[in-house]
Image 1 (cartoon, helix red, strand yellow):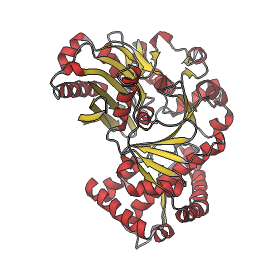
Image 2 (spheres, one colour):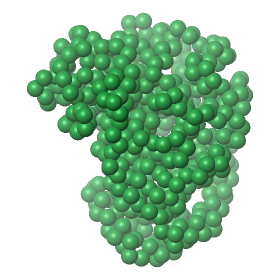
Image 3 (cartoon, helix red, strand yellow):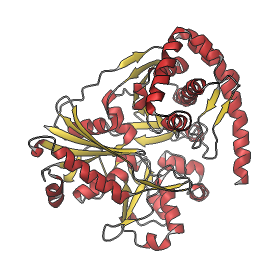
Image 4 (cartoon, helix red, strand yellow):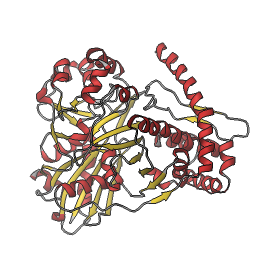
Length: 502
């Protein structure tokens, strides 16, 4: 028996074929996420994404003797981006990327009309240009003719599920990232629909993550070489789907999902909709399993910071790996010297995330001297990412009064021992690294297999353990309070000044 997990990511789209019961990865079909740019504005090319998905399914269907053994296709995706369709199910462009900042004024409009505290009490998230509602309002304002043709919209994974099955839906985890879901009822907010004069019939049906919403369309089954009895499900928010492979515990553990962005996920039995969480821009959400709630915060430029460094300072990814491995070996021998010469890197290349969320925030690299080398900058980038993560972890602990002893890591960071050890030393907790290839696709596949009774329980993947050095933590803690935090506060004043000029 086999299952397919699809991950519609910001940078890449991945289709993975897994064999049950151990979810052995049989084959991966991968392509860069088609995206078009106009200066800072960016849009996903959904027709090309769909064609790539179809090609991937065809390729995977040829990897086993009997494609009928592929029982389900489960789709996870980056959050917030929505796809608009007309009465003929044709895409109404633009499909604005989640990180595109063009709807900043609409985000402020939401605050002005509803109120900052009220919108948080309803949706559990802070109004921001990332969210689906602000994208929808921007399109209505700037492409009124396109908007008048709107008959339905859904999230990225919902769009792929729609193309596969004909059913028009989104799952609970992605619905809770739109800025349109009422967290108290788990339904679309009538209040917000009325406030912004939206058409409720255009909204997707909200479904349970991982459950079968329909079967693969007959005509499409023939085209891609799969059985029409293959079920289709929406695994939901990519970071949430990826967490499934770790069997994340409620309250006690954090998931650190790494990729282009980097997120911290804490599972709770209740939502937290008060002003303290709002002021720290911590996002509430609905989890993909067990009717749990999520607290989630993300850094817009984690892996992106590493890519930025590689693109500008190195010749290849192989050089990045060699430099990181060399730094790790030296760090193990003499970490104190590294910490004493640490540069300050604040990784706000695409703005900042919580607890001080600001789309105008800029990055900074402080402390460069004539003897500074590329390797010094790389080490400081890894450390800077960890300090940003500490800010978020500290906010979780302060707000929930819940100490965190363990962080479970998935994604590209699991391939970098230096980054993992720095996480342990700077955040002062054990780090469990799940070096699982294609964690989001696998988590989505496991979730669907569980919800559809192909398996009885989720078997937790193996992990590597990194423990903090108390001596290193004390040095980093002193540095954090003496250098990183004061410089961050000063920088925020410059960011605020700059934003008033725009």
